[in-house]
Length: 97
Image (cartoon, rainbow, N blue to C red):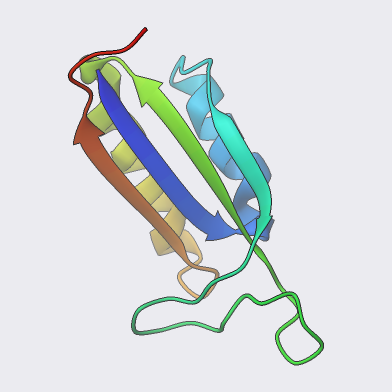
């Protein structure tokens, strides 16, 4: 099993959920309104008057065989709209209950 943590501009929410659904990744946990900023490019997402946009985060655990497909689809989405911002991180799950 692989865990994937995805952080992204809230404008990507439907597209990210669609990627998970089309990849047969049923379960996930979403944080719909979080704040943050990218490491080197892009606008801050603070939900303030100066920086009104917000981020979202989704955490999912998927079978090994689906993980790279999901990551590739997320990377394509990020390349299509690079100014919005999207980051995804994947690591191995050793045990779950």
